[in-house]
Length: 154
Image (cartoon, rainbow, N blue to C red; front, side):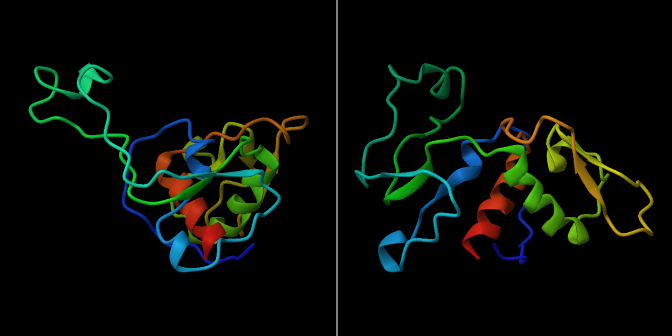
């Protein structure tokens, strides 16, 4: 896996094990990214419709001023069938740590199962996985999930 990571705009925190594993966009324009030992499935039917008011009533007035259209995807993409493990996330944490300026123990970045051995920002980042948690599903913010996808694809 590559060490390059781009910075993305801020977004709310989510439990993002599945969301972290979505590749898409221009799959038809170039070769599919490597599998990285994940079990992928291709989601097709580009051009499917958005959820209607009956299917997603909270996304329509009076709950929202304008309908929030979700569900339509204009491209084919891949998504992992399995959750991202703490062990897999740990590799990203180590790669991104030199670029990260926040708290070394922020669970949005490290997951609930990875901790910094040293909080001193003048020391090189050093992390550990809680013993026995290697195969637990990872948890991170949407922002770091997006960075992870970018890291895998680039």
